[in-house]
Length: 387
Image 1: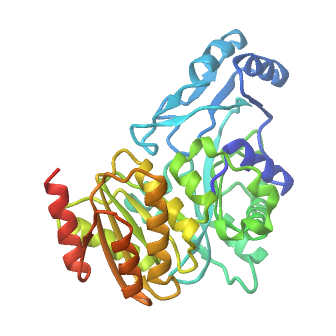
Image 2: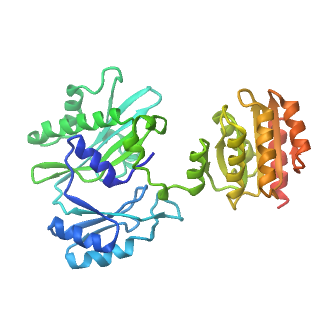
């Protein structure tokens, strides 16, 4: 789960990481009042969306005259911001962060992620702050310092000091920098983050301040953090993905035209690969999981039909924990409530497969039965080519 910059900075503040003076505004009038309260010139208006590259998309404005704040805010609020990371559809801007302008004398990157190959957290740091860390790593990998953390022990002070020394920070700021890195790691672990990033951590007037903040959280751990769950902004997510999460379905919208319903993430990935291999394009990743109920199957099919880009539906089930007859009953019940006019390819194998096929046959649905993965993918491609 992602949160906005202003929400991440509020967490930074709770963990002793210094941030600029700022206010949040959701109307142009609130923005003007916020700039007045901050009382510095210039102020910076930062559009709050769940995507990077806001500056390149015009989502960050430096305003020198406080009288111009309201007009600048009105051009951002209520509109969609398109950045290199949002895609052409953009993201809606519902809030602005109004921040004091700072005299930046140096920029540093600090981030913490999970290295799955090592099965542990890793702290990344670079003196090339303010830039995309991916670009720095690709073009100048020697400028990215990596510190591997033993999760059983945690980040030790000597490791934080080693990171600071690698950045050639002014010795007078070294202790503060080390403390910020240790606090960021504490936030990362205590709140079950999947990413914690400060880019940039700026040097200004003898101080270190987190000028930007990015936090992502592990969805599977949110039950432990109701305070974090409450920060979710569903306006930044695809409506179908929001609906799917309400029914405990793992759904990600893609840009193809073949709607897929599969049980198991591995089978779902293999299904999408097969669809692409035969020249078609998957419209989604939908893993109904092994514990899916008839009601979940029904909602999953409704979500597939709600996507106007879907032209063919492909149901690929290997019955194990999720029995084939449970899937079939869910599809049959959905057919009673929904008008299904799209061609459908169904491949069922495993537990209660014969019963599942019989339920589908008696449902009155028009569908194509496939024998095996390859046959199913080819039948899907044939139907797509007929459109």
